[in-house]
Length: 380
Ligand code: SF4
Image 1: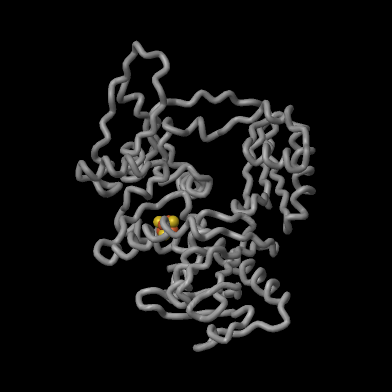
Image 2: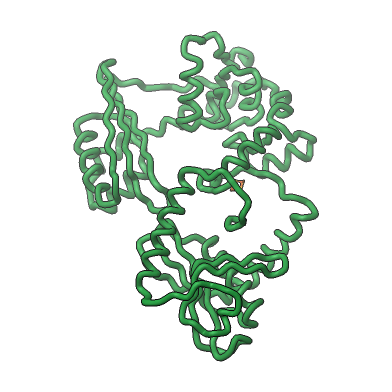
């Protein structure tokens, strides 16, 4: 599907991965004095390496940048071909193994031999041999599921992988057209299934089932549960609902931190820091153009933060402290996850509590404070 000729609007992240993938492919090819281009009949000639393979096999398409010759009996002769794939990142996923096995499955149709191994070349040119035999069975299950899509197309379910997926834009616009329940960032597939059994298929329909409940005064600290129906109501009415007022312990100096990174590479390229010091606000940004610059910006961030008490995001700090052997025990004690003040307590008319969604909403709503509703008032 990814390699098909259908046109999809590529996300910026996908374009970046594609660029690195092409570079990895070119660098790998530079190691060979001669590489044969694929054309009909070339496989039987037994060249060591063949590039740009493109074959139509009944209902399948074989698109492979490189295949490598190995010794062993096949219908081609005393040799067969193994698949090679290239990545635009250094992180190898289960899906990459399956992609390689899929190419092996297609090669088997041509050479009558399933290649036992395949090769993955990562962004830095690292070579990873992968055993394919054990993937044959799960692959067949996936292929038969995909083949059944012709009869009933799969249900659209946005998920946390979408931001890295080539189809993000088309799936999101389809989800918006359908007013799909999975547009709500926090809703789980289990909750969606339950709602669909009750005949609720859209965010709008969901918004009508919210019922404020009386609080049980005997329970001192009731658990905070996320209510997708209240989120849907907030979206339909374009109002913010407060289920429970968060207790904010404000300080004269506060630090807000946002970190951007490439998840596949574990590379953090931007730290955005806002320091509010007795109502005087200053922003700082630390950019790393390459992975080599990461250590420098990390040291700059730690030096700056050590000068202030504040609120930080812990996971990236843990990773970077380990990577660069930095002592951040003092900083760690002051970590506060701001999301915990919002989750299940405040429902903005947004599909997620992500910075982009909230930022867009706040920019559009500045000054319209009347739109805020306190559901606790209904409940008292
Ligand atoms: S739902 Fe998300 S992960 Fe699945 S194809 Fe669409 S964008 Fe990609």
